[in-house]
Amino acid sequence: MMRRPTTLPLAHVFGVRIGAAPSWFLFLGLAVVFLTRNFGTWIPSATNTELFLLAAVAALAFSMSIAMHELGHALTARAFGIEVIGIDLWVLGGFTHLSRETNRPKEEFLIAAAGPAVNAVLLAIFLGATAIALPSDMSLGEALSGSETGQPMVVLGAWLTLINGGVLLFNLLPGYPLDGGRMAQAIFWRVTGNRARATMLAGQAGRGLGLLIATGGLALMWFDDSFAGLSLVILGWFLSQGARSALIAGEFHERLTGVTAADVMDPAPQTIAEATTATEALDAYPEAPGTPAALPVINAAGKLLGIVTKDHLEHTLAMGRPLLTAADLIADHGPGPEQVPEDAPLEQLLQSERLARWGVVPVVDASGGLLGLITIERVRRALASGR
Image (cartoon, rainbow, N blue to C red; front, side, top):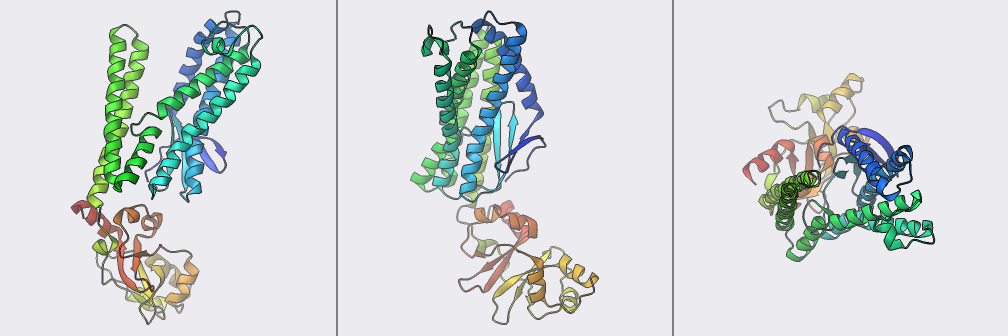
């Protein structure tokens, strides 16, 4: 769906690549510095070295919590048949890169909800661990409020409980691109039946939320809490930018509503008969500008058999196999582009990985007969004209 930024690979978990942007290392360093100072009020008897080590463990555990949150999104998406490209950690959290958008409101809702669900589980685990580590003279409420203690495990468990609770509540706010905003988008989508409108509503809520957070940050800066205020201003700005992207995407999807494969296909494409040899096919291959890099192969009844690229024809001749037929080349070529019916929405085509790879998508009728051919060029023209 979008080009991934270049990140440093950290691990592969359940086959999902997890990487980190440079900003994540900046965040990690700042978090260790902040927590070293903060934990000093929780454990006054600890040395600076002990506080630093505890802060480092806490910062890494928090980063693992963010990664697990994103894994919740990734594994749920995979369960719906969506390929997971990877997860990237950055200064404001994490991002899961998927190969395509969801097709149904249910998928969107469950994928969005999976991240906060992971935080809820982690919160329960860390809360239980804190309760187990409590000394006899301290209550769970005192531990969570930051009361002084000599037990590092209590401090670590309490802080991770609080931070996962904070991440959970923050992500459930109903503004895009937060998970709560995506869940609200899915609900709007289900109720209205209009994905574009639902995306724009969620985007408007996200912009409002971002503006509110940034305004609160400015107020804090006015009252001399510069660090917290600046942090909120930056967070509000990023939320507003993410929401703006949702608004643009919603407007884009709305323009494409009702546009189908039949509207953008070439209804009379050049074809190759199944018995045509590689030499004959290459000799007859059109040389006009804009000719697709692959052409459909049909049988005598006009049914689609597959796709053959010009590159494959040239490679076949270079290998000294000029008499192979188009049908032979299809079998030798491997999986081709998917076929779509004439009423397939243009949005579905834009999510096609094979359209990007092959440059064409055949349009067929219910019996497999070739109706037309969609090319990258025709899709671009449709996008440029809004149809």
